[in-house]
Image 1 (cartoon, rainbow, N blue to C red):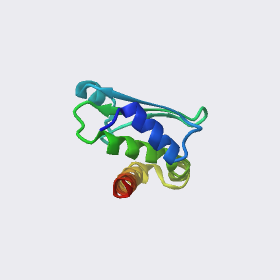
Image 2 (cartoon, helix red, strand yellow; image 1 turned 90 degrees about the vertical axis):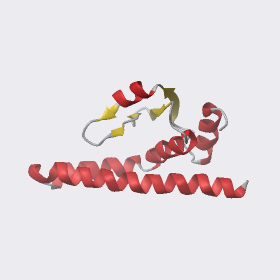
Image 3 (tube, one colour; image 1 turned 30 degrees about the horizontal axis):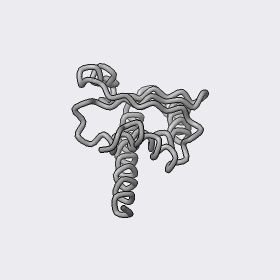
Image 4 (spheres, rainbow, N blue to C red; image 1 turned 60 degrees about the vertical axis):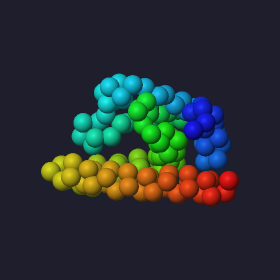
Length: 128
């Protein structure tokens, strides 16, 4: 894989995320694992929608860093929708069901974002 920062710049342009200040960091597995969200077992990237900034964390032992990068960038593409659904759940769903609904939503969101990322990388690879 080409340099991660070069890949970030190319994908950021392709996905029209140039207005975002995005950094990508490769870190040791133990450090990456410490950033995992215990509720949903996924690494939460630092996203600040007010400043349109994000830090993408990728474990050094990840064998497909580019796909992971595109996956996390895809989260930025659906960030407004994600925030809307999260707010809707908080407003409409009762307290007892909220955690169950959010867990299901995040699981499905991850599946959709993974499919989008894989498709984007595959389309790029087919075009080359």
